[in-house]
Length: 292
Ligand SMILES: Nc1ncnc2c1ncn2[C@@H]1O[C@H](COP(=O)(O)OP(=O)(O)O)[C@@H](O)[C@H]1O
Ligand SMILES: [Mg+2]
Image 1: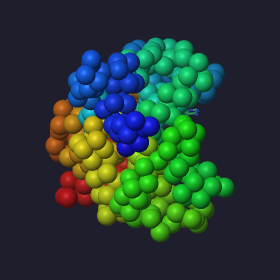
Image 2 (image 1 turned 180 degrees about the horizontal axis):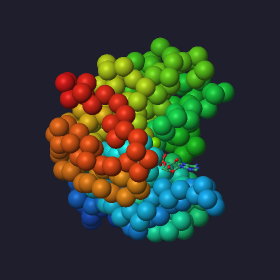
Image 3 (image 1 turned 60 degrees about the horizontal axis):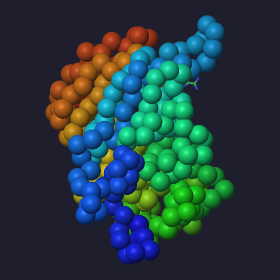
């Protein structure tokens, strides 16, 4: 949480309400973070490349993600998951359609306004980490707050870095870390400002099971304890135990939408999806995940 001058602690619910464009009722109470859409897309199309090699990554996607919930995006490799995350977070613009963060439409927003909204209301864990190589771990984690002109809650930074097992690495540079350590730094960077919406693109992809469990526990705590909205891409049906909802993508379109599904139901839905390239729908550890 962020200390504001009046000593009022800004909660994720406040931020979610702010992002949603309402400042709360007359009592100043912002109410529950759940119940409205944290992020919404209507008829979103996104193409990559040009000419013969052009790929339709998102094919008229309309989805609404409820605030204060843990939503997972799953689907075969190449189904458009990363593209959807980037478009929903305002990091990439759709070719057609509209995207809303809270009640504010971000499509067509000026770069400056969008950058500001992103910095204050969203956190993003990139599939490729995107740490700044010349900065230390501590500086990387502090960067979003610094750019937004906000002061980090030092206790919360200590808690997050300790729980992710990176507290001893704060003065290292990214190249001195393993892939799994870099991934945990990227998770810490997205969580320390307590953004209303956290986007995480395969945040457990490079982690051993103990580190993966800590990342999942922190993301779940963001939702259950702090009222944040988490949207996460994963290939692992076993992680469905953390999800309020699982949206399956196939060929750039939502193909299934499951509410609080079991890992078995998720694995089943994934197997039903037919990838257009003929590659495996389950490129990973389905059995292992189900055995947990
Ligand atoms: N920058 C890009 N240039 C060209 N094609 C891209 C680019 N990014 C993604 N694609 C293509 O768009 C499709 C969707 O990609 P992506 O969103 O990364 O899928 P996923 O995350 O589900 O694996 C894939 O066919 C991929 O090859
Ligand atoms: Mg991806």
